[in-house]
Image 1 (cartoon, rainbow, N blue to C red):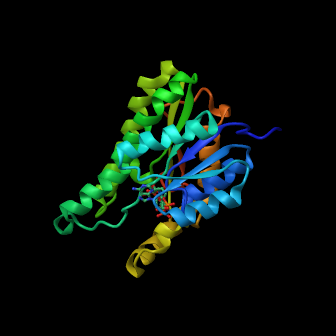
Image 2: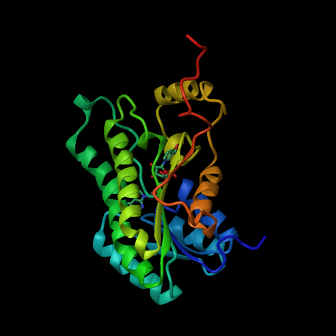
Length: 256
Ligand SMILES: NC(=O)c1ccc[n+]([C@@H]2O[C@H](COP(=O)([O-])OP(=O)(O)OC[C@H]3O[C@@H](n4cnc5c(N)ncnc54)[C@H](O)[C@@H]3O)[C@@H](O)[C@H]2O)c1
């Protein structure tokens, strides 16, 4: 079997670490020219240099629509094409009960997780359409498919990513652009490792109630993104791929 992304140009946001980094590594291994983008310049540049195969770093704050325009123009100038966008940058899983949340924090989560994805698709779609199509993979979450107590802003933002995925799949389909989402469960990344001891205890409890009783690895999410990014998923658009060790399959309990 040949390389699954041979010759494709793939822009990955938030790629300096965690799931985005894993996507960058897996996509490069599969023959893509990877554009590592992030607000963490040093880490991103180091990763791009390590990947080789034409990989490059592009500084990009996903909330900045003008910066998206600059980034896409720079990628076309250097690589001549843009076939794949992975909207991965995101975060803000903290939260707490709504009476303790602050408007600024809520707005920031929405800005990065929702506006960032919106701005990304808005910015790449004209170029992809001109070139005959492309594949957009949005990294949502299991929190984009079910509610979670004390996590309302993050949960709302990830549900919004699902809404963008479905609506833009419908809108961009006749331009040859597919739009799908990946919904990771608990994945071992810096985002999760930095949580408080209380959250860690809750995490252990949640993992014990999953069919696969461990955290997922970033590469396991990257493999799902790889399928959706590649031509192997040519009949998939507007779909949601859950990668969660069975977390959402149903309540892990004995029959009542
Ligand atoms: N780790 C998990 O368990 C998990 C589960 C479900 C969904 N997710 C989602 O997966 C994605 C990646 O998560 P992760 O765990 O790898 O997180 P992470 O914090 O390890 O990495 C996120 C990356 O995004 C970058 N970033 C943040 N704000 C940005 C901005 N405005 N513009 C550009 N880059 C920005 C950061 O610099 C960082 O490199 C996020 O969308 C997250 O919500 C993660």
